[in-house]
Image (cartoon, rainbow, N blue to C red; front, side):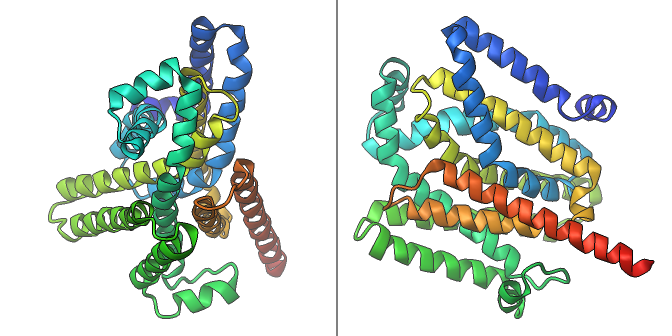
Length: 343
């Protein structure tokens, strides 16, 4: 509770600023003054790539109990920084090149350039998993009939039958088929990675639905529901981090500085999530959530395309910000027109 009280009294970005100062000081002690520039650049990359993630996070967080919000801000940050941005790439590289985790860890510390090469080679597997997972997130949202629509011509046909599960599953089947026939012809490992991305999404959502359906007591039931939502948020965060982890090696090969910079970005994304939640921005700007899901769909397409073609990393962040900004402006215009109608 203390953390949320701190946010309420002093603003949601104080913790992020304090963490940034501590991480930068630690980076300077470890690597010298030159560490400031790459760490700052990496933090900005993470924030830009994950802005739409903050919008989605705040939407889910608004339905969670206070205790699970605290867990998201504390344990969730540790998972986001150490498991997702540090350990997950090591595991993916280890699996792809069929070497032990200790070997890959030693490679990252003592031969970062070779580690960067190995990570690039593992990218198609990473992109297939994350791309299909995010595709299902976006399609499930638009597959549900909604009273508020932004781009009616696109959203009405998908939501007409109110079958979000079938829409997302059909999209995943199509995506895995495209992976196997076009993006990575005949490559079973990459196609299986895409299928695992779909399976992971279905398992997480199924568990969430199961726990909600078996709520018999408010206290116990909502805790189960909170746990499933927390796990869902962490998986979303992992999917969003794939691009920034890969892009990081264009700036520095030093694994410690990469983790430091992405950690700062991850903490600021959490702070943006809290700010959106506190300010009620999602309620006031009605198309912002729609924009975030369009950004998710765009990122999923770019991830999948990256299996075969070289996609500039900055493109994902630029497109995401452009879509979010357009949704924000459309919401502002709607609000202005609504005010004029009342006059």
